Amino acid sequence: MAAFAARLKDAVDLDAVRDDLTEDDSQARPAGTKEQEMARQTSISASAIIPAPPERVWEIASDTSRYSEWVENTLQVLHTDGPARLGATMEELTRIAGPWKSVTRWRVTQFDPPRRQTQEGEGVSTAKGMAVIIELSPAGQDTSFTLTLRYTPRFGLIGAVIDRAVRGSISRSQQRSAQAFATLVACENSTS
Image 1 (cartoon, rainbow, N blue to C red):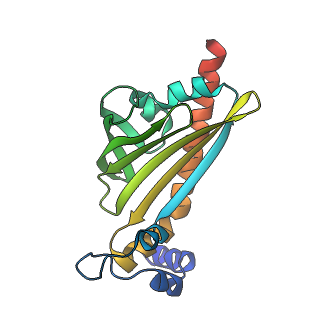
Image 2: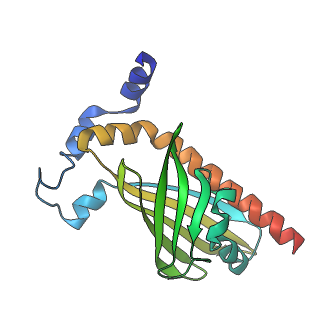
């Protein structure tokens, strides 16, 4: 426990966190503007260049039944409405941290093939306003793939401290997911 506390202290500038946040309870503070709420959001992105055309990358990225093959913290897809499309839903068993797991539910709220899709989710007790954004753009004959996780930590100052402590781990996980996706697409593209 002492090692965790030391690591947490080193990872977090408490004065900066205190300045950024007040109690994260809508009854305890008046609702902020949309800009203030967005300032409290955490956004973590990872990218990869994939040797395949955007249409092929989009096809695989939209196959929600396969997320557990490449999204590091998706342990199992429990339900899916099929390929991503506006309004489609999915449910997955997600590793939150260490042994902690949660069932997360997602809905596609933005769908602009083959450029961008946004899936908004719920089910993580320490975060609200979760979204996963998948963006593609041409990169010569290849495709640039960007995977972004966006969320707002819950529990005010305590949540912000926890978020700062785990942000590096989440960032590494996002990068491994982007690389796993690139590898999956490259393998499938070479066999088709």
